[in-house]
Image (cartoon, rainbow, N blue to C red; front, side):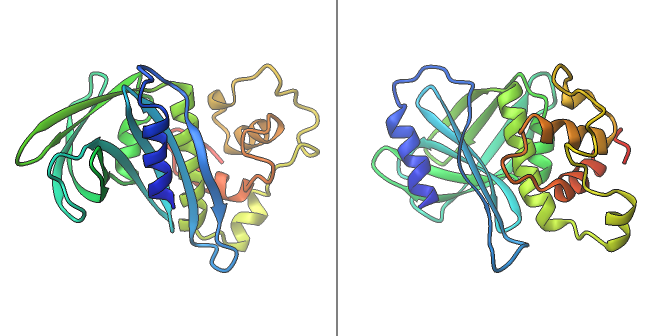
Length: 226
């Protein structure tokens, strides 16, 4: 169903020349296995869809490209470059293919960390018959999407011990009532507890925020303090 959804995004927006917003298609946790988070968000630029995904605790990207002669299961080279950074390379696999598009999966947690903070980023796919380049816009919407995907997978991959919960309890709007976060930029808070409280008050972690999972992810980020 998720593959169909990404193809549908391409077909619905094939006439859109530029888009910098992301649409969350799915964001939930398996009620029977908390290690299996599911998050999928898509964007479309120049008629090609890009998805950021957390499936069963694993981060990846999926990109729609011209199908050509590609069949399901084939592999291809994918090069990635963000702004002025040095390009990186990875291998992609074709998840599905029709007469118009092939859906290629690639990347992991390190790929998203590389793309974080991008203003503009590009993918170049190389097959035996063609080479294609696809550009996408970064910015706040993309940053929010990466963060949500990392939270979905980070909460699944990071075990929370009783000690962590004791020393860093989940912040709540009530506990942080003395701080007015309305005009603050949450991303500039260097304290994980303060950043989480800010995001909760602004409802940027959803209606049922996983604050423990977010703090676990936050602690792994460079320059952050508990």
